[in-house]
Length: 427
Ligand SMILES: *Cc1c(COP(=O)(O)O)cnc(C)c1O
Image (cartoon, rainbow, N blue to C red; front, side, top):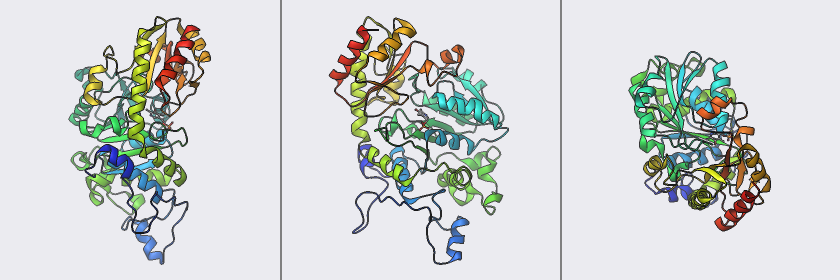
């Protein structure tokens, strides 16, 4: 980890060209890498030497961008994945398999909820979902002897609930397991969960990090601070020999800072292959270079929009942690003093139908399932991303039927407010 401030890391980390080398990161668009002897390559397969042999596992361009995100989060090792879904799957499955259990916040992205509650359940991993505002006692009660991790989102998509990272980290550590935090909405510009006790961070880089709606991607970052060997009985995959990799014990060979990501690369990337293309990693890096500048503007626009909405008679409620009226204001001030994100949610007084009329009347804000890019966009989760959830589950996830999610882009705040005002007139 470098000592530079986050702004400098956004621009400079991950790649330092040598004399006469390209200034911008090179796109190494190659599936394979050439070696002089079979013995040279054998060392790579044995994980005895570091180097590249096949881009399904690792690629230099992707690794340069992973190294930048690693530095931005203050981690010890990181890997890019082909999507945020793959990142969250890898982050959990790397330490929890059939017969294991995970405690997760109930307020998480709909795709992650489905991954956990449906798909990973079919794989034999059990999840207990807890309300993010649960008491420490309620959180404690969710653990079982076979619990292997705790999972939450810094700012939940789309409920915008701010996670009390310290509370979740304390509970996880009391039970000898790591806390995994999906930091997609805050980005390391606004929050670095490792500074508050999280052990592993994930990202859908598809959102603010890319920031232009151009490439789907994800990232997993390890803090290097979780002592796997101290809880070796819970993490045999890291602390006992891997017969599929010549009997390597990851926590011994790669240490506390390298074991987790090396195992995820050597086993999960090898077997599942959710690897991004070097071209996509290059695009992601372009987004990262301006992330600190863009996040400030996203937050400024969202604050102005939220303040406007709060005063409007056709708006029943506004949820934005930047508003002093928000129940998450205090947590946001603690964990994200410089701003949270550009996403605001609110309820239209005329309900579900009114929300549809509002959405149809917007001119600048496009209806998209996407969030967090340069162009303002808007979504009604109950009829789209969260439609598989029952009313009860919707309520538990903090996504009522009248909720409109507005992702404020980088346009003029005055133009955005004018567009919202004319659409509210028709709601
Ligand atoms: C979008 C999103 C994901 C899933 O990421 P993809 O890149 O779409 O696969 C996971 N977590 C959060 C918080 C998200 O917003």
